[in-house]
Image (spheres, rainbow, N blue to C red):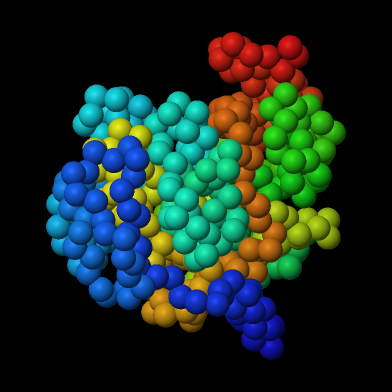
Length: 437
């Protein structure tokens, strides 16, 4: 009955995302004012996903992080735009740094595969082109609002969010019968299950990675950069709420008694779960797919409560942006917009098992019956996008150090808080600013 209730709730969450109409094939953007394309698209539109649009042509370089997926998407795109000569270059999350070097020299990609948190810096530095208003209007209709927000800055859209990535609690059905509702239950189970002498632990996760541990601190009332996430002078690392979160975080060493560096070792965490050695792990859906390939039966649910409070976690998206240095804006915008179609979403889901950022998920084979994504959907109401300010990119190293100091008990909590504030301030000063100016 509990499993049935979960599936009903998750299905309801999924259905709540359904919009009035399906995602359509990208319509012609028309000639961009900055386009170097000699021939422009006609003013007609296409609403049929299978209808080819031949007016756009020329060369296009696509930077994409997953080769098999990139090739399949390009093949599907060319069925609509056969006159575009697309070259795939496999470039993953190093794309922002690579674009900064290759873009101005004219050898960079036209369409860029990015994590959503790279948008701010790239926009500030002038490396991404804003989308034309007509394309933005169409994307607003088919992509979830919180995903659109992650690719928007100063009212302009700078990319097409095509996945919405959420993490929760994955579990191995062959090792445990169900999932704990609370962290207190999980801790109690770990006391009877664990055997550190053979590295046997009930739960593993990337403990000293702030992204994967943020839910702990949020539960205790910590708000990065203030209540609205926009106060760069107030990271909050010196707050009593952050101290309370650090105390609970440190207490979890009792059930995962390894050094901080080992918690961030994929072989010791993700790969161990995929091999069937770990009952519970905090992770995304892609890990479930990896485990399933090894014959592991995986379930998923929301994160357990802490002190009766449901934790909230960051939600992320992968985005296709267009380089400001593109030599073919018409084709670049058309390719980026193609990522918002069900055709592209089906390819992404089939190859990596990651869900789309589309409002309407009907028609994507297997997605509505995906137990893992349905389980992770239970966490969806308790997610939020990361602060959309450039200073967000400065917190990762100070936080990695802070969590390591506390987890390994090399500094007290108060000492670690002071160190975090100092480290963040030094990074600001390197940029010519200060929290105290």
